[in-house]
Image (cartoon, rainbow, N blue to C red; front, side):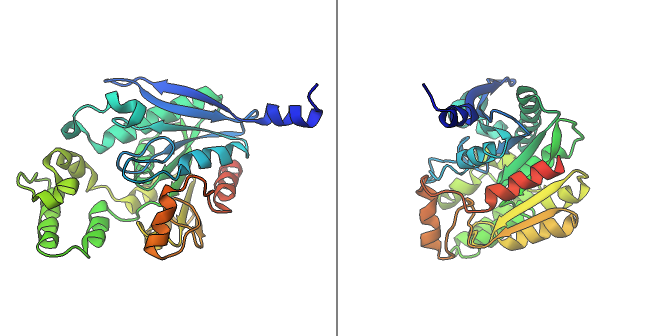
Length: 307
C-alpha cells in the first residue's frame, strides 16, 4: 500500500498530453503540461530558426530550456502549452514553401494557440511567454485585442527592429561580405527582394527567406510594447551573448510600468553561464544543466500576482 506521502507526490505530478491545432495546411502539434491544480495557463513561444517545442534545434542547441521552463512552472501551478511552430519537427507539414512564410503566420498561430491553451486548461485566458524572436511574435499577437491573452512575458527579446540587431551581429564579418550583407539588408528593409546573393550569405539572405524577412524587418518591439496595454514582464540574462541587456532596457523604457528582471550570470537560454563566449556556448548543448535560479520563480510569481 502506498504511503500517504508517496500518494500525494504521485497525485501532484503534472500530466503531459499531446495536443494539436488545425491550420489551413496541416495540424500544429505541441505538449500540454498541466499540474493537478492549475492556477494559471501560459503558451511558450519559441525563438527563431528550427527551434522545437522543448527549445532545441538541429543547429546545435539541445539545452531543453522550454521543457525545463514548463516543468518549473507546473510546480507553481502554471499549466503550459509548448509547441512545434509551423514547418518544424512534428508541425513540419504545416510549413508549406519557405517563400510563402510571413511573420504574421507565427503571430496568428500564437493567438490561436492562446485560445486553445485557455480552453484546454479551463482558464479565462493564457499568458504568452515569448523567448528570443518569440518575444516579438508575442508582441505582434497581442497587438490585436484578444480576450484569450492575459498578458506577456518577454524573455531574451530584442528591443530594436531586427535590422539593427543584424547590423550589430554582422559588424565583425570580414570584407567584402560585410558590405555585401549591409547592402542586401538595406534593400530588404526597403521592401525590395535581392535576386543575387553571394553563396557565403545564402544562409541568412537566400531568396526564399527574403519575403519572410521583408515582413519581419519593419516590426519595432519597443513601439509594440508601448502600444500594448496589458501586463508585461521583461526578463533578460546579463551574460546573453545573442541579445544584449540594452535591448531589455529599451523595452522597459517603452513600458515604464512593466516588470523588469535582469538575471546576473544568466545567458540567452536562461542558464547560468559566464560571459566568455566559448564557455557560454557550451551550455547550449547541455540539457542536464537546470535553468538559472530565480528565473522560474520570477516568471511564475509575476503571472500569479498579475492574473
